[in-house]
Image (cartoon, rainbow, N blue to C red; front, side):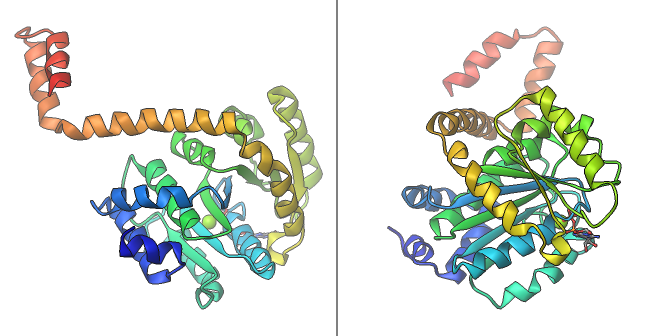
Length: 298
Ligand SMILES: Nc1nc2c(ncn2[C@@H]2O[C@H](COP(=O)(O)OP(=O)(O)O)[C@@H](O)[C@H]2O)c(=O)[nH]1
Ligand SMILES: [Mg+2]
């Protein structure tokens, strides 16, 4: 094992931070490191925390981190919010809120909003999770804004996904149903101090009836005050064995390997190659199949 790998596995924070930067930057050091770290992964409980902006995901993560630290366990937090630039908006707010943890080496926080990538976010988040897992974090919280395909993809890397909704925010459970309903194991009705929590609960129940997934739990919280947060953690732990199901994991890795192969193949062909080949086909100089066959022989 390399020195970097050894230090990460032994919990060295500086080595961990450096490796996180390698992953973010897609540095060549990342892949060999992740390969040697892989045998050390599989221990951490990975919790996805998703939901619309402003639902209280960061507040909940903060409280969950506090609770888990209280059990003497360590936490990693990955905040994925591609919409907010590093210097402003929610992520800066998150950082300030999480600052009390900054002095605590038991909470490692990384924001994934610093790069303006379009694709690869799910992959980088997966790699970051593997890194924190190998570094011995007992629980890894992955906060995502639940909207697009990337987020659904990211949610799949979690053992358990918490979907955070709030009453009266006009959260359309119907629109969430398509993507998020299928991946939710625990619905968190946060801001239960506000009116409308009962109505939201009925809406979720109704939508769940349509989705008829496995046992889904609904937990009411006031994250701001820490209320209900231990119930959220307990519900997540009840759902954990299903999230670790061997067949489910195999299917997720199968899908991920397909994606990794696709990325790796595409990386070999610069965009100019595609355009040049596109011109050849469009002008009927060549047929597309012979071009593909040539490429695959490369
Ligand atoms: N009333 C109320 N406000 C909350 C609660 N939890 C979080 N908030 C507030 O909601 C806002 C958004 O919270 P944040 O955690 O940043 O949401 P995120 O965008 O989902 O990460 C902040 O102003 C929080 O203080 C709660 O339980 N009740
Ligand atoms: Mg947030």
